[in-house]
Each structure stands twice: as C-alpha cells, then as structure tokens.
Image 1 (cartoon, rainbow, N blue to C red):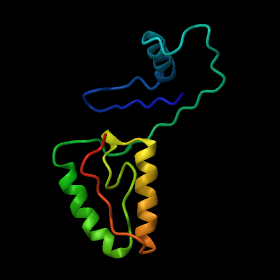
Image 2 (cartoon, rainbow, N blue to C red; image 1 turned 90 degrees about the horizontal axis):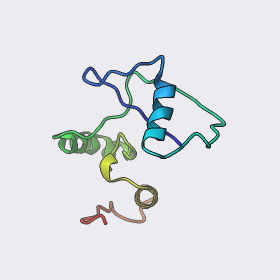
Image 3 (tube, rainbow, N blue to C red; image 1 turned 180 degrees about the vertical axis):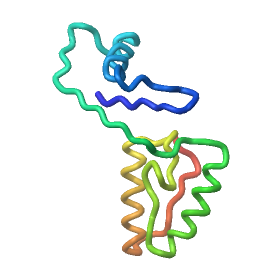
Image 4 (cartoon, helix red, strand yellow; image 1 turned 45 degrees about the vertical axis):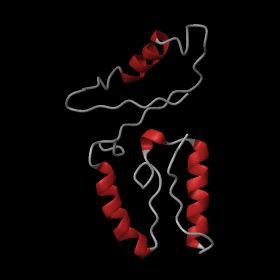
Length: 116
C-alpha cells in the first residue's frame, strides 16, 4: 500500500510522527487493522512535489505544452498534459501508446472528448 501525504502552510505535518500518523489513519478508516503485519516502511519528503489541480492550471499547461511540442517534447504524467484528477492506469497506457505513435508519425494527437 502506498500513501502520499500533502502538506502546506495551511496543513502542517508533524515530520517526527508522520509514519505512525499514516498507519493510524489507515486503521481509522479500516484499510488495515492490528492483525495486519507491516513488513516494510519507507518515507521520503520532497520540498516540492507535483502540481495539484487549481483553477487556471489547464490554460498554463496548454501554453507550456505548445512551446515544448515543436521541440519534440511531449508532456505526460503528473506534470504534463493529462489531468491528475482523472488519471488511471488504462487511460495512461492509451496516452503513452498514442504519444509513442505520434513520435514515430503513425497518428495525430488524440484527445478524448469524454472520459468514462
């Protein structure tokens, strides 16, 4: 199980107890209980993670994407052209496949109108 914890000025995190706090949170929402054995724990803190959705994000990403595309740079992933808030593995497989096909000039960019 992988857990991510966000923090900000408005949502501080206790770095000394973060691991225990996350485990307790998993228990609180009944994802795990005391009968489960945790075999490995890892913690890494990034000062700057990835951009989160905000109003105006799509317009900014679009402008950046238009500069990078002519350079042969196709943005994907959390920093790229797809939206983190509607991502999933199947959709990302399709986007990555179509990006590779575009790079080798087998198809034009595909943008879904409806994501179910």
